[in-house]
Amino acid sequence: MANLTGKVIIISGGGTGLGRAAAITYARAGAHVVVFGRRADKLKTVVAEVQAAGGSILGLAADVSIEADMQRVVRETVAKFGRIDVVMNNAAIFEANTVAETPTADWDKQLAVNLTGPFLLTRESLAVMRKQNSGKFINVTTSMADNGAGGYAAYSVSKAGLETLTRTVAEEEAKHHISAVLFNPGTIHSEMHATGRDPLELADQLLALI
Image 1 (cartoon, helix red, strand yellow):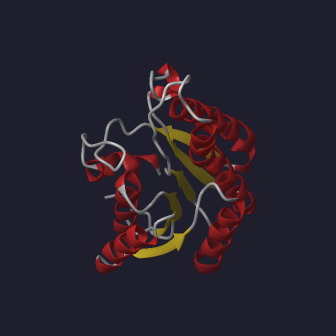
Image 2: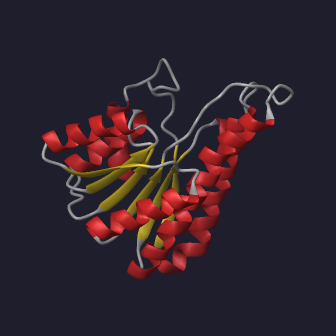
């Protein structure tokens, strides 16, 4: 087991699926974990799981697509733990529709959560990481970002944008010893996918990212 003692890790969409698995995995390895999402009941469950196992965790109700919420998440993380070592941009929504049939509101909603949200959290976290002269972003992606996918127009486009954002941050922030990487977990069982691997089976891969 990797030793992450003292590391402070923020995970968006931390109440379910891969976000929950990451929170449990990193807390077990000794990290201070901050999870946030829109559903307080899901967050409370994860917080209780981690605390019952002796882990350090903070749960915050917040919407990744709202600028003020991301400012608050960063502010409260630093107030409690003093720093930010890793940000995992995991939160996403996944809605099926073709280009011809996608309402503008649905398009805007998916880009707001899947792309603008990671941008906001990244931007707010960078100010902290630059002062530390260290930090890392882990951005969760999909093969649809490269290939597109008929019937999933907005989701595919949002993830392609996230991949470009990741490469841009890596180039811009290298001089501050801040890195940004992509993580494609493949098909995992979650609220977005009825089939696939249990996210907790990815523990070794999640640890290797840090």
